[in-house]
Length: 454
Image 1 (cartoon, one colour):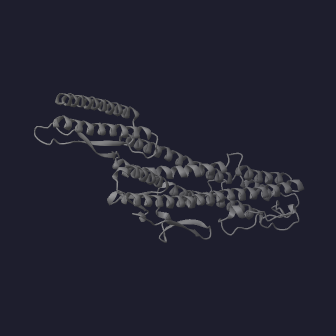
Image 2 (cartoon, helix red, strand yellow):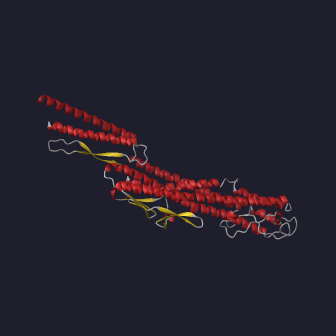
Image 3 (cartoon, rainbow, N blue to C red):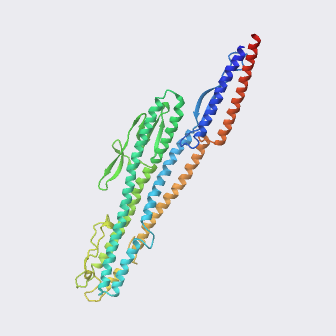
């Protein structure tokens, strides 16, 4: 009698274990599309026999584990910030590339139109229409330079806004990680730990998309997060980043505990936006300003050596520029009276020497040590933007392939396979049915024995 009752106890324990196995399998299947979910597995243990004549006490569940590969998680934290950095650069530079226009319908058209108007003036230096055309094209060129300068500065401001927004997102995620640390350290029941750790890993992944953070595991399954050598999360405490607007641009520097860490941020979307704002766009603006400055300097140098229609020595055609900095936005025509355009090389009506020299400037390599024309310089600027945009796009694609491979490897360990779970479900179901039959057989035997005793 006691052996049969022991068998019932053993079988009952086994039924609970197999039922729990089906529950965990169902949980895995239910979360097959849940972001950050790590597949659960059950640890079974044999219940030891009570004496040498006992076969054993069956099986029991000793725990549920979330399957994770720490090495792959670490590798992901190294590669993901590089992918998102290049992605942020590609997105921002793609917009800038579109702003530059296509060759033959952009600033190069305005440059060529000005020198074409000088050529028409050389054909008829006394023509009032030709002189007015020169002023119209010169003012159009100045407006075009100002427009492109505004576009690039607006792109800088957009990148700066992204920097500020990203810092806010980093601080929000850091606060959520600290809250999870508090929940994990205060958890009294380990059954909910895998769920908290899944959320923790998902938040860390989202944070690593924004910046190249370093995660340090701590006792009790909590983590410490650092950025650029500065603590961001320690236990339940956060140390938020801040932004400080710097004169004269007003663009934001990123600070941690009052220390500027902008130059130390190397990964994540934050690094991408910083590089576009502080490196790429600064280079494009400098190239545009240099081009505008050289056009003004070269034309003024020729124009001041000639004579206008009133017989007066020519003055500056464009308003003088002290330096190349800000030249594109400051390029304006100094002449308002068409008669003041100096087309003559000598003080004689109908002379066109200076007009011809001005016209020839458009096709003369006067830039970069005498190797590039003004149109060439514009083409080099457009090429720089296109090259940087393409490089960022290619780098992003390459990094995405690496991240995809790591994700694929991670899924082999942590991801849910419906085929595998279906096999597990069938296995637990068959085991449950077998235990149920054994339980019924023991119960029937006990009934027979009780009937014979009564």
